[in-house]
Amino acid sequence: MECTLEHGAHIAVTKCMKVQKKDSVLIVADNKSKDIGMAIRQKSLEITDKVRFFNLDLPAYGGRPLKSMPESLKEAITKASVTFFVAGPAEGELETLRGPFLQLCVQKARHAHMVGVDNKIMTTGMCVDYDKVAKITDRLYNLLINTREIKVTSPAGTDFTATFDSGMKWIPCSGIIDKVGEWDNLPSGEVFTAPKTFRGRLVIDGTIGDWIEVKYSGKVKYQETPLIIDVEDEMGGSFIKNIECKHADLLADFKSYVGSEPNASRVGEIGLGTNVFLKDIIDNILQDEKFPTVHIAFGDPYHEKTGATWASDYHIDLLMRKCSIWLDGRQIMDKGKYIKEIFG
Image (cartoon, rainbow, N blue to C red; front, side, top):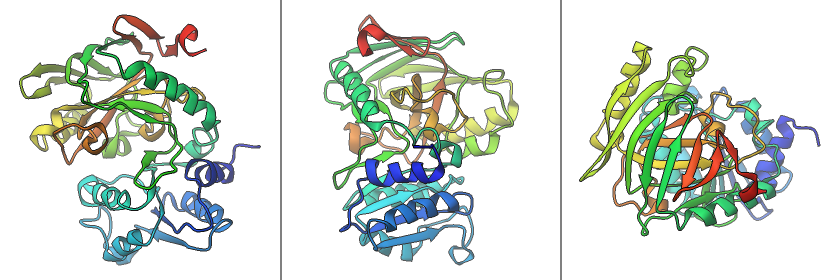
């Protein structure tokens, strides 16, 4: 089948979210993602007549960024069993809208979190064989659950070591969301956790998430002006100790973000992408973090999933290109390519 917006929506609705006739579907979009939201709406309506659609950019909601979640949207969430969030990020909305939205959804629904999705993603990352993505994800998950230490390097200069607590959970994300309370980013394909300790250097030459991604998309070439971040482990966790970047505005915005509150500068996530169908990094973290390489996030460790004992209202993902990875000394990835002897 041709990879079109409609086909991507079909996979999201039928394969990933497994929408059924009994389901009540809620879709939240904005002006930029309206066509995507409507494509998901149409595919949902072919299965169930219980579908609601919200456009966050309607004047009635007061303009973006929203300072709080509209009451009508809160009510709609309580009646939904499947939810899609396809609207783009806006500065401050992680705390005021997206975080609270997600927390409400997982109480009784299956949720697809697709913040910043665009037509390119719908026709690439969504149009893949999610059964194969699930197999690779499960294989990597089974390697990681007993791993004590990961070492990661990259040609750009990334060089760090992370260790793991047996009480923390590795989370496999295969894109198949079939149980109440489950949620995933679509497109999917990754395994992640919160590290126990983390020390070393990150050279961010891939993609930067949240509203910083939107602000600098197409304006900064991270391979030419990467963020360079040094992290040290101390008694209370692993925190940023130094940040450098030749792009002054980007440096200032990133420093402001991770300085928003104490845990915003703490390493909250390490993730390995498993969507081997992706051919390029496209400067959109929603898809790029599923690319076969490594991403790190500062801020919230998704404590409700990983079991971390701390939290943050902030979470920003950072991607590094062509990573090489060793699990307890055993190499599983070489410059962005999984070792064939391990993954086939």
